[in-house]
Amino acid sequence: MKRRVARAASAARGWVRHLRDSRAAEPGRIRLKAWAAIFGLVMAWLIAGLAPSHAVVTRDRYTVTSDKVRLRLIEAGPATGPVMLFVPGWTMPAWIWRQQIEVFARHYHVIAMDPRGQGASDIPSSGYDHLRRGQDIGEVIAQFGPRPVLLIGWSLGVLDALSYVHTYGDRQIAGLVLVDNSVGEDPAPVPPPPSSIPARRPPHAEMMRRFVTSMFRHAPDQAWLEQLIQSCLRTPEPAAKALLAYPVPRQYWKEAVLSTSRPVLYVVRPRWAAQAASLVQHRPGTETELFADAGHALFVDEPARFNAMLDDFIRRRIWP
Image (cartoon, rainbow, N blue to C red; front, side):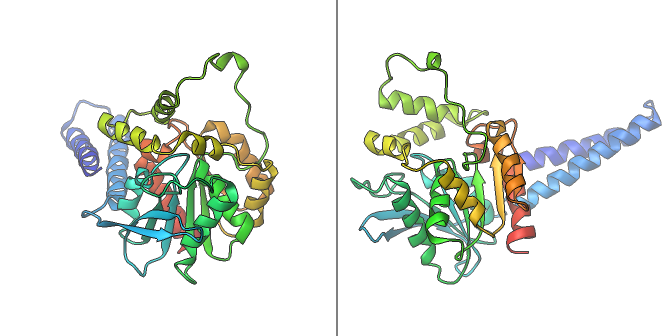
Protein backbone atom coordinates (compact mmCIF):
# COMPACT_ATOMS: atom_id res chain seq x y z
CA MET A 1 0.00 0.00 0.00
CA LYS A 2 2.85 2.39 0.80
CA ARG A 3 4.17 2.00 -2.74
CA ARG A 4 0.72 2.76 -4.17
CA VAL A 5 0.40 5.85 -1.98
CA ALA A 6 3.88 7.03 -2.99
CA ARG A 7 3.04 6.56 -6.66
CA ALA A 8 -0.24 8.48 -6.24
CA ALA A 9 1.47 11.33 -4.44
CA SER A 10 4.29 11.43 -6.97
CA ALA A 11 1.82 11.55 -9.85
CA ALA A 12 -0.13 14.35 -8.21
CA ARG A 13 3.04 16.36 -7.60
CA GLY A 14 3.98 15.77 -11.23
CA TRP A 15 0.68 17.30 -12.34
CA VAL A 16 1.34 20.31 -10.16
CA ARG A 17 4.77 20.83 -11.75
CA HIS A 18 3.32 20.31 -15.22
CA LEU A 19 0.60 22.89 -14.64
CA ARG A 20 3.03 25.37 -13.12
CA ASP A 21 5.32 25.15 -16.14
CA SER A 22 2.59 25.02 -18.77
CA ARG A 23 1.88 28.34 -20.47
CA ALA A 24 -0.02 27.18 -23.50
CA ALA A 25 -3.00 25.67 -21.71
CA GLU A 26 -6.16 27.66 -21.19
CA PRO A 27 -6.46 29.25 -17.70
CA GLY A 28 -9.76 27.48 -16.97
CA ARG A 29 -8.29 24.10 -17.82
CA ILE A 30 -5.28 24.84 -15.65
CA ARG A 31 -7.52 25.58 -12.69
CA LEU A 32 -9.52 22.42 -13.27
CA LYS A 33 -6.45 20.23 -13.53
CA ALA A 34 -4.89 21.95 -10.52
CA TRP A 35 -7.90 21.10 -8.40
CA ALA A 36 -7.67 17.50 -9.65
CA ALA A 37 -4.02 17.38 -8.64
CA ILE A 38 -4.78 18.79 -5.20
CA PHE A 39 -7.56 16.23 -4.77
CA GLY A 40 -5.11 13.47 -5.69
CA LEU A 41 -2.63 14.66 -3.09
CA VAL A 42 -5.28 14.86 -0.39
CA MET A 43 -6.47 11.34 -1.17
CA ALA A 44 -2.90 10.06 -1.07
CA TRP A 45 -2.37 11.64 2.34
CA LEU A 46 -5.66 10.22 3.63
CA ILE A 47 -4.80 6.72 2.45
CA ALA A 48 -1.32 7.07 3.90
CA GLY A 49 -2.91 7.84 7.25
CA LEU A 50 -4.61 4.45 7.15
CA ALA A 51 -1.51 2.56 6.01
CA PRO A 52 0.52 0.80 8.68
CA SER A 53 3.53 2.94 9.56
CA HIS A 54 5.46 -0.07 10.85
CA ALA A 55 5.16 -3.82 10.82
CA VAL A 56 2.32 -4.97 13.05
CA VAL A 57 3.18 -7.81 15.37
CA THR A 58 0.53 -10.52 15.32
CA ARG A 59 0.39 -13.52 17.58
CA ASP A 60 -1.55 -16.73 17.49
CA ARG A 61 -3.57 -17.52 20.56
CA TYR A 62 -5.74 -20.57 21.13
CA THR A 63 -8.90 -20.73 23.15
CA VAL A 64 -10.95 -23.80 24.06
CA THR A 65 -14.74 -23.67 23.76
CA SER A 66 -17.18 -25.10 26.29
CA ASP A 67 -17.49 -28.24 24.12
CA LYS A 68 -13.69 -28.70 24.08
CA VAL A 69 -12.91 -27.38 20.60
CA ARG A 70 -9.63 -25.50 20.18
CA LEU A 71 -10.03 -22.27 18.19
CA ARG A 72 -7.13 -20.26 16.77
CA LEU A 73 -7.26 -16.49 17.20
CA ILE A 74 -4.96 -14.06 15.40
CA GLU A 75 -4.39 -11.19 17.79
CA ALA A 76 -2.70 -7.81 17.42
CA GLY A 77 -2.75 -4.30 18.79
CA PRO A 78 -2.71 -2.77 22.28
CA ALA A 79 -4.01 -5.20 24.87
CA THR A 80 -6.14 -2.57 26.59
CA GLY A 81 -7.51 -0.97 23.43
CA PRO A 82 -11.08 -1.18 22.15
CA VAL A 83 -11.73 -4.64 20.73
CA MET A 84 -12.55 -5.50 17.11
CA LEU A 85 -13.50 -9.10 16.28
CA PHE A 86 -13.34 -10.22 12.63
CA VAL A 87 -15.25 -13.36 11.61
CA PRO A 88 -14.45 -14.82 8.17
CA GLY A 89 -16.79 -16.51 5.72
CA TRP A 90 -17.57 -20.06 4.67
CA THR A 91 -14.45 -22.29 5.08
CA MET A 92 -12.20 -19.20 5.11
CA PRO A 93 -9.21 -18.65 7.44
CA ALA A 94 -8.85 -15.67 9.74
CA TRP A 95 -5.78 -14.43 7.89
CA ILE A 96 -7.89 -13.35 4.92
CA TRP A 97 -8.45 -10.19 7.04
CA ARG A 98 -4.68 -9.48 7.04
CA GLN A 99 -4.96 -6.03 5.41
CA GLN A 100 -7.50 -4.98 8.05
CA ILE A 101 -5.50 -6.44 10.95
CA GLU A 102 -2.38 -4.50 9.88
CA VAL A 103 -4.23 -1.19 9.74
CA PHE A 104 -6.56 -1.32 12.73
CA ALA A 105 -4.12 -2.93 15.17
CA ARG A 106 -2.34 0.43 15.41
CA HIS A 107 -5.19 1.77 17.55
CA TYR A 108 -7.41 -1.18 18.50
CA HIS A 109 -7.10 -4.63 19.98
CA VAL A 110 -7.82 -6.73 16.90
CA ILE A 111 -8.91 -10.38 16.92
CA ALA A 112 -9.54 -12.47 13.80
CA MET A 113 -10.91 -15.90 14.58
CA ASP A 114 -10.69 -19.21 12.78
CA PRO A 115 -14.17 -20.68 13.33
CA ARG A 116 -14.39 -24.37 14.14
CA GLY A 117 -13.42 -26.50 11.19
CA GLN A 118 -11.63 -23.60 9.49
CA GLY A 119 -8.10 -22.25 9.32
CA ALA A 120 -5.93 -23.64 12.11
CA SER A 121 -8.80 -24.43 14.49
CA ASP A 122 -9.83 -27.94 15.46
CA ILE A 123 -12.05 -29.92 13.11
CA PRO A 124 -14.67 -31.48 15.40
CA SER A 125 -17.35 -33.89 14.25
CA SER A 126 -20.17 -31.56 15.30
CA GLY A 127 -21.09 -27.95 15.94
CA TYR A 128 -21.53 -26.82 12.33
CA ASP A 129 -24.85 -25.12 13.03
CA HIS A 130 -25.84 -21.53 13.66
CA LEU A 131 -26.38 -21.92 17.41
CA ARG A 132 -22.98 -23.44 18.16
CA ARG A 133 -21.16 -21.04 15.86
CA GLY A 134 -22.91 -18.10 17.51
CA GLN A 135 -21.97 -19.53 20.90
CA ASP A 136 -18.32 -19.81 19.83
CA ILE A 137 -18.35 -16.09 19.02
CA GLY A 138 -20.00 -15.36 22.36
CA GLU A 139 -17.35 -17.29 24.26
CA VAL A 140 -14.58 -15.32 22.54
CA ILE A 141 -16.34 -12.01 23.26
CA ALA A 142 -16.84 -12.99 26.91
CA GLN A 143 -13.06 -13.10 27.37
CA PHE A 144 -12.98 -9.30 27.17
CA GLY A 145 -15.27 -8.78 30.14
CA PRO A 146 -17.18 -5.51 30.19
CA ARG A 147 -15.40 -4.09 27.13
CA PRO A 148 -17.92 -3.94 24.25
CA VAL A 149 -16.64 -5.52 21.03
CA LEU A 150 -17.13 -4.28 17.47
CA LEU A 151 -18.25 -7.44 15.65
CA ILE A 152 -17.41 -7.67 11.94
CA GLY A 153 -18.73 -10.63 9.94
CA TRP A 154 -18.29 -11.43 6.28
CA SER A 155 -20.32 -13.87 4.16
CA LEU A 156 -21.26 -16.80 6.43
CA GLY A 157 -19.74 -14.75 9.24
CA VAL A 158 -22.70 -12.37 8.83
CA LEU A 159 -25.08 -15.18 9.77
CA ASP A 160 -22.83 -16.37 12.60
CA ALA A 161 -22.70 -12.82 14.00
CA LEU A 162 -26.49 -12.45 13.72
CA SER A 163 -26.96 -15.83 15.39
CA TYR A 164 -24.90 -14.53 18.31
CA VAL A 165 -27.10 -11.41 18.54
CA HIS A 166 -30.30 -13.45 18.23
CA THR A 167 -29.28 -15.68 21.14
CA TYR A 168 -27.34 -13.37 23.45
CA GLY A 169 -28.50 -9.87 22.56
CA ASP A 170 -26.25 -6.86 22.03
CA ARG A 171 -25.14 -6.07 25.57
CA GLN A 172 -21.50 -6.99 24.88
CA ILE A 173 -21.12 -5.52 21.41
CA ALA A 174 -20.36 -1.94 20.43
CA GLY A 175 -21.72 -2.32 16.91
CA LEU A 176 -22.13 -4.63 13.93
CA VAL A 177 -20.45 -4.55 10.52
CA LEU A 178 -22.10 -7.03 8.14
CA VAL A 179 -20.27 -7.66 4.89
CA ASP A 180 -21.87 -9.04 1.73
CA ASN A 181 -24.52 -11.55 2.70
CA SER A 182 -28.26 -11.59 3.09
CA VAL A 183 -29.69 -10.33 6.38
CA GLY A 184 -33.12 -11.84 5.79
CA GLU A 185 -34.58 -8.66 4.35
CA ASP A 186 -36.63 -8.44 1.16
CA PRO A 187 -36.15 -9.29 -1.60
CA ALA A 188 -35.11 -12.88 -1.04
CA PRO A 189 -32.13 -14.20 -3.00
CA VAL A 190 -33.06 -15.52 -6.43
CA PRO A 191 -32.01 -19.17 -6.85
CA PRO A 192 -29.91 -19.99 -9.90
CA PRO A 193 -31.84 -21.27 -12.92
CA PRO A 194 -31.80 -25.07 -13.35
CA SER A 195 -29.97 -24.67 -16.65
CA SER A 196 -26.97 -23.19 -14.81
CA ILE A 197 -26.58 -26.22 -12.52
CA PRO A 198 -24.28 -28.86 -14.03
CA ALA A 199 -25.77 -32.31 -14.54
CA ARG A 200 -22.86 -33.84 -12.64
CA ARG A 201 -21.55 -32.11 -9.54
CA PRO A 202 -17.79 -31.56 -9.81
CA PRO A 203 -15.51 -33.05 -7.14
CA HIS A 204 -15.44 -31.07 -3.92
CA ALA A 205 -11.86 -29.91 -4.41
CA GLU A 206 -12.63 -28.58 -7.89
CA MET A 207 -15.80 -26.86 -6.70
CA MET A 208 -13.89 -25.15 -3.87
CA ARG A 209 -11.16 -24.03 -6.24
CA ARG A 210 -13.75 -22.44 -8.53
CA PHE A 211 -15.56 -20.79 -5.64
CA VAL A 212 -12.46 -19.27 -4.06
CA THR A 213 -11.17 -17.99 -7.40
CA SER A 214 -14.55 -16.41 -8.16
CA MET A 215 -14.49 -14.26 -4.99
CA PHE A 216 -12.18 -11.65 -6.50
CA ARG A 217 -12.82 -9.08 -9.20
CA HIS A 218 -9.12 -8.15 -9.19
CA ALA A 219 -6.89 -11.23 -9.42
CA PRO A 220 -4.78 -11.65 -6.27
CA ASP A 221 -1.24 -12.98 -6.15
CA GLN A 222 -1.31 -16.57 -7.44
CA ALA A 223 0.72 -18.03 -4.57
CA TRP A 224 -1.53 -16.28 -2.02
CA LEU A 225 -4.63 -17.56 -3.84
CA GLU A 226 -3.33 -21.13 -3.84
CA GLN A 227 -2.61 -20.88 -0.12
CA LEU A 228 -6.18 -19.68 0.44
CA ILE A 229 -7.63 -22.55 -1.62
CA GLN A 230 -5.64 -25.12 0.33
CA SER A 231 -6.75 -23.59 3.63
CA CYS A 232 -10.40 -23.75 2.57
CA LEU A 233 -10.00 -27.41 1.56
CA ARG A 234 -9.05 -28.18 5.14
CA THR A 235 -12.75 -27.94 6.06
CA PRO A 236 -14.18 -31.44 5.45
CA GLU A 237 -16.84 -31.69 2.77
CA PRO A 238 -19.62 -32.82 5.18
CA ALA A 239 -18.87 -29.86 7.48
CA ALA A 240 -18.83 -27.46 4.52
CA LYS A 241 -22.23 -28.73 3.40
CA ALA A 242 -23.68 -28.44 6.91
CA LEU A 243 -22.52 -24.82 7.13
CA LEU A 244 -24.58 -24.00 4.04
CA ALA A 245 -27.74 -25.52 5.50
CA TYR A 246 -28.53 -23.67 8.72
CA PRO A 247 -32.03 -24.92 9.67
CA VAL A 248 -33.75 -21.59 10.24
CA PRO A 249 -36.04 -19.40 8.07
CA ARG A 250 -34.83 -16.12 6.60
CA GLN A 251 -36.90 -14.25 9.18
CA TYR A 252 -34.47 -15.40 11.87
CA TRP A 253 -31.68 -13.18 10.52
CA LYS A 254 -33.98 -10.22 10.04
CA GLU A 255 -35.22 -10.51 13.62
CA ALA A 256 -31.63 -10.43 14.85
CA VAL A 257 -30.52 -7.33 12.95
CA LEU A 258 -33.73 -5.46 13.80
CA SER A 259 -33.37 -6.34 17.48
CA THR A 260 -30.12 -4.49 18.10
CA SER A 261 -29.92 -0.85 19.09
CA ARG A 262 -26.18 -0.73 18.35
CA PRO A 263 -24.83 1.01 15.25
CA VAL A 264 -24.98 -1.19 12.14
CA LEU A 265 -22.99 -0.86 8.93
CA TYR A 266 -24.14 -3.10 6.06
CA VAL A 267 -21.57 -3.37 3.26
CA VAL A 268 -22.76 -4.98 0.05
CA ARG A 269 -22.26 -5.55 -3.65
CA PRO A 270 -25.14 -4.90 -6.08
CA ARG A 271 -26.62 -8.36 -5.38
CA TRP A 272 -27.71 -7.23 -1.91
CA ALA A 273 -28.36 -3.55 -2.64
CA ALA A 274 -32.15 -3.95 -2.50
CA GLN A 275 -31.88 -5.68 0.88
CA ALA A 276 -29.71 -2.80 2.09
CA ALA A 277 -32.41 -0.32 1.06
CA SER A 278 -35.07 -2.39 2.86
CA LEU A 279 -32.95 -2.56 6.00
CA VAL A 280 -32.53 1.21 6.07
CA GLN A 281 -36.29 1.59 5.70
CA HIS A 282 -37.10 -0.87 8.48
CA ARG A 283 -34.22 0.09 10.76
CA PRO A 284 -33.53 3.84 10.59
CA GLY A 285 -29.96 4.74 11.42
CA THR A 286 -28.46 1.77 9.61
CA GLU A 287 -25.57 2.78 7.39
CA THR A 288 -24.93 1.05 4.08
CA GLU A 289 -22.10 1.09 1.55
CA LEU A 290 -22.16 -0.28 -1.99
CA PHE A 291 -19.04 -1.78 -3.60
CA ALA A 292 -20.09 -1.94 -7.23
CA ASP A 293 -16.76 -3.01 -8.72
CA ALA A 294 -15.50 -5.60 -6.25
CA GLY A 295 -15.80 -9.32 -5.79
CA HIS A 296 -17.33 -11.12 -2.82
CA ALA A 297 -14.09 -10.64 -0.86
CA LEU A 298 -14.47 -6.90 -1.33
CA PHE A 299 -12.18 -6.01 1.57
CA VAL A 300 -9.38 -7.85 -0.28
CA ASP A 301 -10.27 -6.39 -3.69
CA GLU A 302 -10.49 -2.81 -2.38
CA PRO A 303 -8.70 -2.74 0.98
CA ALA A 304 -7.93 0.99 1.06
CA ARG A 305 -11.54 1.95 0.45
CA PHE A 306 -12.87 -0.66 2.87
CA ASN A 307 -10.46 0.38 5.62
CA ALA A 308 -11.21 4.08 5.17
CA MET A 309 -14.94 3.39 5.30
CA LEU A 310 -14.62 1.25 8.43
CA ASP A 311 -12.33 3.75 10.12
CA ASP A 312 -14.83 6.54 9.45
CA PHE A 313 -17.72 4.47 10.82
CA ILE A 314 -15.76 3.63 13.97
CA ARG A 315 -14.75 7.23 14.63
CA ARG A 316 -18.28 8.58 14.11
CA ARG A 317 -20.50 5.86 15.51
CA ILE A 318 -18.54 3.42 17.70
CA TRP A 319 -15.68 5.09 19.55
CA PRO A 320 -15.84 8.85 18.75
